[in-house]
Image (cartoon, rainbow over all chains, first blue to last red; front, side, top):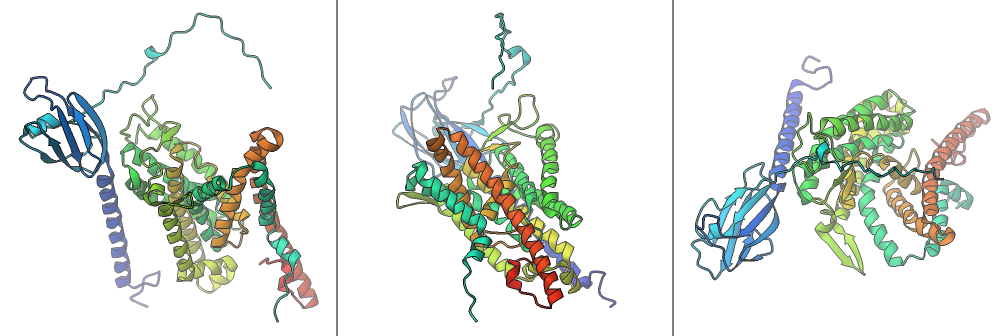
Length: 160
Length: 373
């Protein structure tokens, strides 16, 4: 047979198989990327504190709604922690204090795990109401090891 | 003519199941555990373990015996989970991500295992067992030395304090019971993880469907006789490799389901006993090295885990030490595997002897062979 290759399939079938395999590979990569982006969890620290420069002051009482999560109730100088999933988020506040903006949408940059949100800053209308929050983690070093005890070592007896 | 029911023959065919039934029937009342507690634990364990046990069906169908090499798939699932935790991918998404990351690893490992097993025809079980030990070493090298050094890891919480390697125990809080709790239904005072059960049911339907496909029929034909299958044009070696690849992929998914239920992972040990527990369960369920069905999986998981639940308490009640119950359950689990293998060897030899006698006398009674092929 002239049109058949060594596996008994002609070039048309071989091309089709190759296309199907390539399609599956593309689907696999696309699905992995989709799950990766939409499944990423972030920690939100939600602040209701006055800024150091005194530009914005804390609210007496505010209710914060993030995505479809349970609302958080914050009083002045409160900070709450919330776990959210996905890159894009919607934040809405309910308060009796004066506010220029009650709702905002923002997207967490890829690679950021923890975000600090300032509710008073958001209510004032500022766009930079959230920032990347980094925990300074220090690995334990040999210097952190407890000092050797000066007492006599306790002899260990064999046990059965 | 209708065949007469032979009680002795029935017992001989199901001796492992009968032994486990007697043991658990004795131990259950002694343990003093409430029916509600036992039922709830059994329901949880069916969801947790049955997927792993199902991964053994296809190699048995293809005549490759019990796939002890399924630990390769378990390792792939664990690597997927490590990355899901490292990248902070939570909930069911995290499980999906683990499966997607583990998939190519399981396929590559399964393909390699299948190729090795094709070179060890007739000794697949022992070869698979040793292959598991070999790959355990490779896994340790990758997870203990390459992760964090060559393979970038983001989370400092999961890496060892020296800067590379993964900690001994991994906290899976971000994905813990996410599949079980997805559709938890409370009925008669018991919690049913319906989400997990649906996935197991889909797998059952897949296996029923797969058996009827061309590939499934090829596997069954190879399981019956490799020489005849080869002569009739079935690509024996490729089909055997596909059986092992599918088994490894299913084991990978099974391990992810298992670990999400547990909620934490012993990074370097979690996969070691996976093959042993799955094999023990399917054998206790009445399967043999050459024949296994879907009911065998469920009967096995229920019986083996019923013993695991009641034995420590029965040991504590009888001897004042739960540890003795632990020894019992380990001994009986290994005993079930040993008994099933011995019975298989005995039936095979008996079958050959009867065939030989039949050739001399010119009469062969297939029923006398005890189901041996």
